[in-house]
Image (cartoon, rainbow, N blue to C red; front, side, top):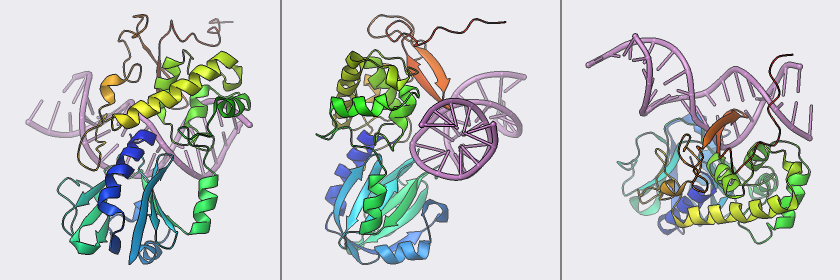
Length: 283
DNA sequence: AGTGTATCCTGCAGGC
DNA sequence: TGCCTGCAGGATACAC
């Protein structure tokens, strides 16, 4: 599932084939993945040159020559697949939107489950939209102190807070779970209850995990692929995510799977002690 | 402000 | 073999 490292890998891979190219036309094959009116979406993109291919949080962002943006939220299964011809590339199994590029090439937005969304934002809309997202965890300004401030204002479980894009941008379930394992913090710990030492460890582990995953080209669990078709190599380096029943790489205790907030978390019962004792049954 | 639940959608795994 | 059921989950809406 595309999180920050996957979006970063996609943006980097795409920059080579897309930056400087002009979008000739747009074909919307699946209306529901385009935010707002598809006629306006087409109009806004047609004959515009892509000046920058970047990323904000988990979103791939195309900056157009009028300073407007195409924001691609990849959802669960969204992919951006470049192709040599005007139709979708052979690798695109579920094309939803096609950008026809100058020189005959194309870029397909492909999404099996169609949880992803494409939206066009004017320069002003983009500024407002981006402001609603939290800080970039790999930016210079994301300091330990900044994280401490974010954590201190919330009593929600730290894993839920890490997933909230309005507070920190780009972290999804995989990297939240990994960072918490490295930081020796139970995913359910109330954010504000994490002490200074825990905050420092979490800050360090978040950035380390995200950076290492970017270097590995992301994590492929199922269908994530970089634009060149390669799988992300971070999967085999996952310490906790998806390893329920397997030995903790620190202490050999069996990794546990817990569910809250509607999604799975994985943690070591010994290294990441639960914040509150289980309530006694009965009475 | 916080938590929980349903919704979107389809592929895949497990049960029989 | 094949059908059925349930599960996966990022963002969002909504109830409490």
